[in-house]
Length: 437
Image 1 (cartoon, rainbow, N blue to C red):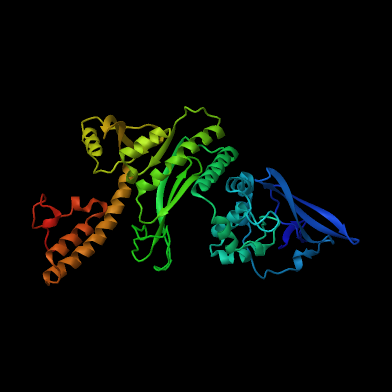
Image 2 (cartoon, one colour):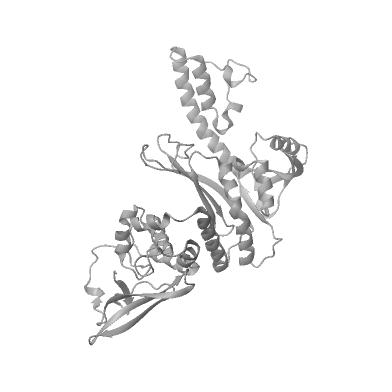
């Protein structure tokens, strides 16, 4: 195990003691007349329902060498704070124990190898601090001051992680997430009356011939079409934006499908958060999401799970059009108070499908400025593309059907098709009738 460098009274002292974690004790033991330092860790056995101990000899208990900082020089640096901070958070939330209790502990034996929770924590710390393959996991842990267990570094291998993860089910992953979320709310007093949900995806560089359930070609956020992507949906708390529930999903799936897959865990999470915040079962929470997650079925499922809903409806929705027409009436947009005094809003109740909902139309100058910047950028790109299409159309190098498709695609962003038109055509002409860009 790597040593720990301790600053004390102006000198740099060498100590073989690793980072303290829950249940770890240090003591000296005499063997053949010589004292040795020993680290012992209390580990929970989910099968026997009792703690067991495992020990590792740190080395002779000789006086620690002392270095005079005035006579030292810097030959290299190493990041320590991020690893230590993540280790502290994991210790405060009992991450290892919670995962082991849900996932069944150790399939390699308590004294032979790391548990599922220890492997997950080690990989998570590595990916957060020094992203790399699991093959480099042992080297990363060996070069880190913070220690995760009493086990030797070579025990943490990619093979050990895959063997441990092979038997873990989706239901166990969900239970572990909810247990950790409840611990985070209790320990750090998070506010969870309002929860935000959103999804994104990440490019992968997995070979096309490599089979996989998650890496699929879909609508990549990076706009790259040559890579397979993996989707991630996350539900975060109101305070601190701490992740409470997540779902990974194939890159070719829809946003609505991933939110729908979370409902089995949302109801359980709702009850656990109530217990953590000492609220009764009638308490309500609100899920905030964007317009891509709208459907009547999702609204009904959220209500059944005990959640209110706040969503930005797309402008193409019938209810959104009706709300805008209502807000355009004289005197219906009212200025807000306090910090939002520059914002105006109109409120009405109207049916959204078969559901009765409260609609709010908001007018914000700050939001308008941001939208104008986005439109200006999209318009510059569209002009370049339309000029290119015009040259090709004039030279007869593009078919009419292909031209119409390219024009529609170019004007699809930022509602450009609603105010960009050809000067030789009437404004009411549909975009498909444009010729020459």
